[in-house]
Length: 129
Image (cartoon, rainbow, N blue to C red; front, side, top):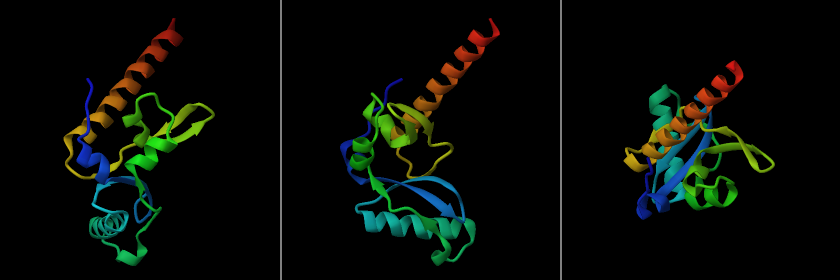
């Protein structure tokens, strides 16, 4: 399964790491970094019943910044990379919060996890032999 994000969504997509009151990766569609920050802060405050000033997260990174920093062969998967060692991705976004209903983005994440599950099954079968 291959999905393609629309150009508009790539332009407006941001990702951040949240630290309080929730911890994890957050994706949001917004017309600017400032708007993305406000949307993340307000949404997490409402979802977790916390005052907005207690919501903590990194500066949102744009789609282009994530692609430029990533190393995956499939550039669209680079937005899900969270750690690497040398030329190998060692950590991916796990159960990210999507503040968007973009089907292509959700499909790409599902594609990533289907591939990881397939590889894990192959590894288990290989070890069992």
